[in-house]
Length: 172
Image 1: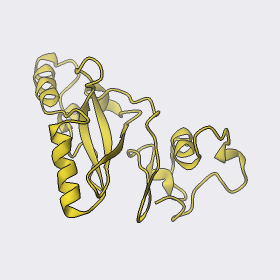
Image 2: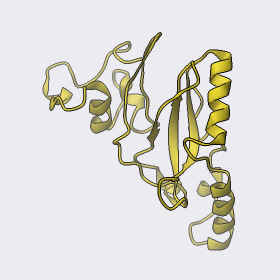
Image 3: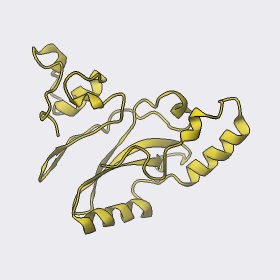
Image 4: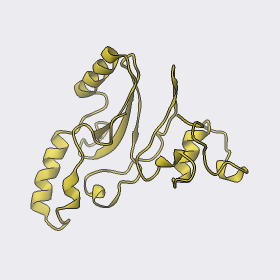
């Protein structure tokens, strides 16, 4: 497991340069965009090759450019790679926080999935909506629901007694 925006780095500058300073922000965003990766791409192929060579499943944060459309929006994306080097899927952060909204687009949540791997089930989200997978931590209920229930079940985990929070070990 690698952190969010591991490839090609977290845009820490969004917290230190005021939004009104457009010239330096444009320059930094242009560089940020130039270093974002498409999924799939040569960059992700290298990550897949490394995962396969090491024989490990990988969840890694990438700055993903929207190659399916304008190639000008960047998403904070969690990329899942299997131990055999295949891209399992990706999840775009639904709600960037504060200054992050200057550089990252909003995901739509349709890509929240759970992957069955030989060692267990793998799912994830970003801080602020997912660290809730353990008892007592806050979480966005929609994200939790999407990860817990099979698609199309129509169930609401919050409506069942004892289902408001997960116990450690319920989801790996």
